[in-house]
Image (cartoon, rainbow, N blue to C red; front, side, top):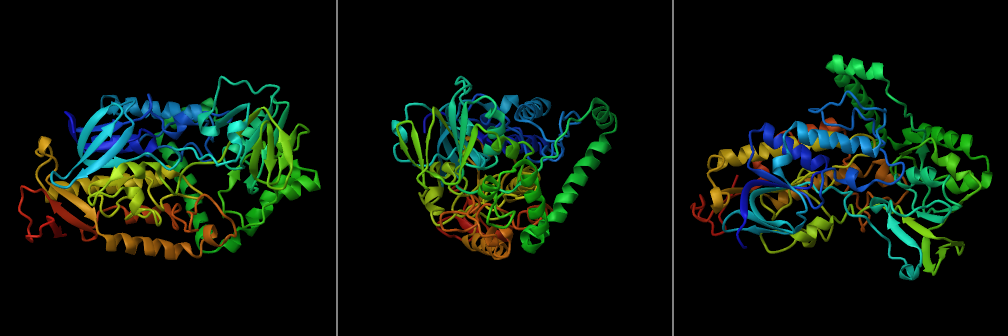
Length: 515
């Protein structure tokens, strides 16, 4: 590589995961790090997703860092603008600005087995790092379906995560493709503006009422004056969701009562039996993510909305053709078709110890030790990695657990190697590489537990599943269980690699010694 800067840790991405990692590094006394961000500001998915109605479906006080409580959330469920502002405040409060490197999209990360370091090429310059913490997140790369004839469409086309705010939807005929968490927020937000809205629904979703309300000034004042009340509120929200986990993971039949609540929610707003039939799922609630909205069904019942109970299969000029043969003339297409979750695009840019990319290694399915470490990729960790997702609670809880693991990982490197900061430009002198047997054992345990969960037995096909039908996304347990599993690094699950200038303790040519 050309002249570059060497750091102890390189964090990739500045969403919740990346900023959380940066805060934790500073709290651990580590300041020799950079946060490489491809965009020009922090926020991750809460920066990129700015579509009308964008908001979180997890309560505000639970969808925030435990170490950075916010007593001033304006609503019980926060909008995108409030969450993005919160992340900007976290950045300033914890002094992260000097570590940020904007417009530095990672093009390639290559492990240097001789120097035990990562060489990182970005659009904003090159770096090397002893440790890489990848926090690009599963909701970072929009997924667009390959629809025949889409290139012939004369109107406007964009994904919900790349909303074109310069395009005026008023008076237009608009098609929304998909019925996931984004679509149910977009539809009621634009329905009153457009002449005609056509929703292409491949699979209906289970939708419960969204119990959202403003948080008054007096309530916020109490949280500011008595910080323990904010912690208490967060704890109650967490505890309720922990109690729900068994229904998802061990006793899916118990979710039948929740299905009845969802059906009543639909019946209150949708009086047309034919439309209700289109909107009623044929799978167990919870198999796909349960959606929250009090405005989605009322919007679908309006006369300027048409629900096509079939996926989009072809585009012929301005005409959209569904799988059932129905057609719709539209001026604009909004794809709410999700993200590359089970095939993380960053994996194509990470080259490990054997010269293979992470995408090559994961071609048969993504898997990582404790959701963090992949075999053959020493000193590389991912935040929100395989099987760390949740179906009913806040991902911030999982992120903070992985930050505990990251912190102990770095401590172990200090104990095994030389004092912090002494590696210099020569790269790290010690590295940890997850043993393939440990990765397989962890993944086997996770997949065995997954077999009885609603996500595997509920009778649906969801974005939780990869191309082979394996659930590589969700954690099949409580957040407390995951926190215990990631509290400490078990060195027996790793091989210790020594730099070339330090003689291997076993004399092995590959400088690998058993932990």
